[in-house]
Length: 246
Ligand code: NAP
Image 1 (cartoon, protein in one colour):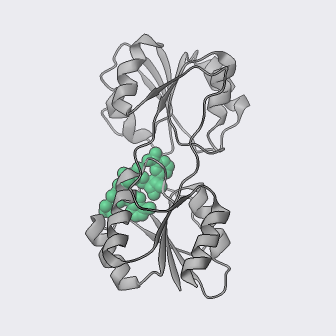
Image 2: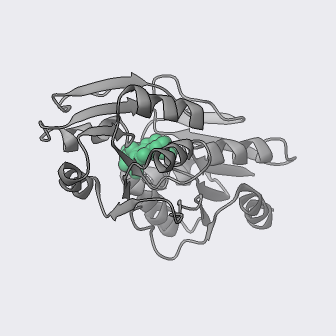
C-alpha cells in the first residue's frame, strides 16, 4: 500500500518516520529538489517537480498511491493547489497536514501583511536595519529598498537581484533565543520580517524580537485549496492514513 507524502517540512519527515515502519505500507516522500543538501526523511524519496497538476496526476496513475498527504510548507501554495487538482482528477484521497500559524501575544508588536510585496511596502516606516527571514527567493522583492540595510538568512545562497545593502548568513533551523538575541544585538537590527510559517523550529526570532522591542512584519499564509480535509498534527495524519490506506 503506497502512501505519497509531499514533503519538505519537519512535519513531513515526522510523518514518514511514523509511517515507514508500519507493516504493509510503502512510503514515498517527494521533495522539490531545490535545497542543495536536504534533510532526508525515512522511507523512499523522490525529488523534483512533477510538471504541474497534470504531471502529478500522471505520477499518481503510474504509481498508484492509495492516499496522498500534502505536508508541504504553508507557503508552498502551488504544490498544494497542484495536489488538490491531481487528487480530485484521479479520485485519490488527499489530506493536508499543516502546522498552526503563530499568534501575537500582548507584548508583541506585529504588523500582519497579505504578501511579501506588502511587507516591502511597509518596511521604510518601521525600521532601517532589517532582519529578513522570508527565504532566499524573496530577496528580489526587497531589492528596490536601497535606503535600508538587510541581514538576510537563508538555507542556500540567494541569487540576484538582492538588496544593495545586504549581508547574507547561511543557516538552517532550529534556532535558539540566545542566538537570535545575539544577531539582533550584533547587527543592531530594528525590524524583523517573517512569513507566518508557524512551528517551533523558527519561533525563537519572535521571542527575541519581543524582548528587544522590535516590530515584526508578519506575512500571512496564502489560502489553502478548498475541499481538502486538514489536520495540524502528525498523530492525526497517521490516524487518517491508517483509516484510508487500510
Ligand atoms: P511551491 O511554490 O508551491 O512549488 C513550486 C513548484 O515546485 C511546484 O509547482 C512543484 O513543481 C515543485 N514542488 C514543490 N514542492 C514539491 C514537493 N514536495 N515535491 C515535488 N515537487 C515540489 O513550493 P515552494 O514554496 O517552492 O517550496 C518548495 C519546497 O520547499 C516544498 O517541498 C516545501 O514544503 C519546502 N519549503 C518551502 C518553504 C517556503 O517558505 N515556501 C519553506 C520551507 C520548506 P511541479 O509543478 O513541476 O510539480
